Length: 330
Image (cartoon, rainbow, N blue to C red; front, side, top):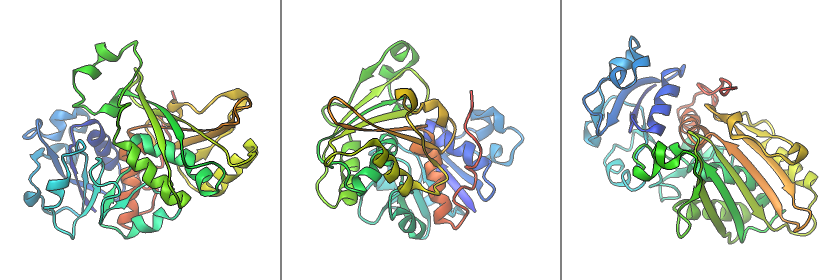
């Protein structure tokens, strides 16, 4: 299966390259970029020297000039993929890792483990990968909303992300000096992930959902922890939350439902370099609020690894192909 990667020099694109270079059913046949156009992949990524894909030259992305590719991954900043992707042939399968096509007409939303979503993904040629924050939050919330255990309105999502979540072109506010030994919230007035999360939750609940979202950047390279607060519908013991999650994700290879022993949540480090998501639940004894926690790698389940999982389904490969290695354990 010949695949291409647009935005190959960005954080998401380079993670896609790492995963696809080791994929048993994918051959990297095209690399697209902007500022790095004209460089060989091995020049940009010296570890690829001597490998077939290392000799590929990064091309400036012109949709009409992309040929000989069965599936194209597109990892461009939100706002930059809608127009060029409309110029690609309908026969070419596309996974848009950016935010331009989430819940857009003619595109399938690609968070595989959401109830009923897998069958749609397997049939589509146009796949919109989920956002990194929504991947963590929705996986944690979906079983509770689907089973009617919590109210879908006025959910609060407090989430922390590593700096790679801003993208390589994030600007001067996100460099090492600006982020080291610092923690800050951003996007509080409006954030593009809010409509995405509300739309997904509404489909699960069958009625209106509203989200208050507070994203934060923390001085680490990668990872997301989403802490979600929701009002229970009646008295809901924590055991019932775990039952719903295990019923929803039983047999899912990439979702791990883990007990919050000693009042502790999952660690982002557990998922580093993988497509895994770790979920835990609690009930606050003072307020009665339900707490749902999701920990992922923002470049893994939040971007590139989820994109490969979707591409596997779209092309008839085993769903875990290229993704079955353990995370970095230290």
